[in-house]
Amino acid sequence: MLIKCLKNGILGIVNIYYELNFYIMEPIVLTDPNVQPTDELVFSIIGENSVYWKQIIDYLYEHHFDISEQWRFYNDGKSWLYRTLRKKKTIFWIGVIKDTFRISFWFGDKAEPALLASNLPDQIKDEFRNAKRYAHSRAISIEMRSSEDYENVIKLIELEIKLK
Image 1 (cartoon, one colour):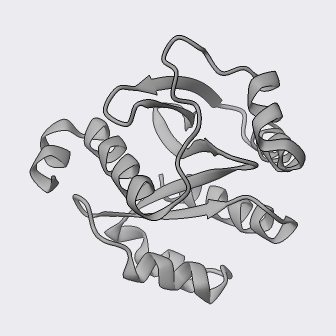
Image 2 (image 1 turned 30 degrees about the vertical axis):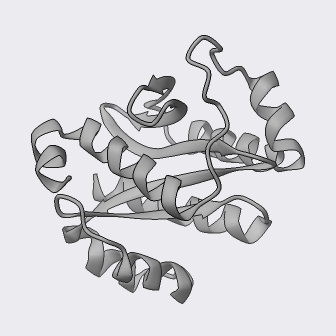
């Protein structure tokens, strides 16, 4: 798997993302390649947690001018992922799960000092420290369920943008 990641770059990271989510977390629900996700569909699945989705996207556009977003179906994971980018660099990935969504950030080893020195909760720092490395990167994933989760996502967005 590590060799595949090194050879295939971002595709390898997506493969790893799906494998991590398949074995550890709630499965992603947007699995029909013929049904392009819309806000209406996504919000009907994530319910009351759609407020966090809207707040995150609003925050990005209010604080950063060069943001783009895209939905893409990944055959290796058999589901749709939402990706936000600044210029050509990925900020985060979102997978829609039942009643909420999971937002994932990938940080390289060089980000470790900044991440550990940040004001993120120790639980998130421990998740990063203990995460399995894939091609010198590790993931931090948050299932959105509270305003505290939202605040941590904003901190991770700013850290990700600062480090890019």
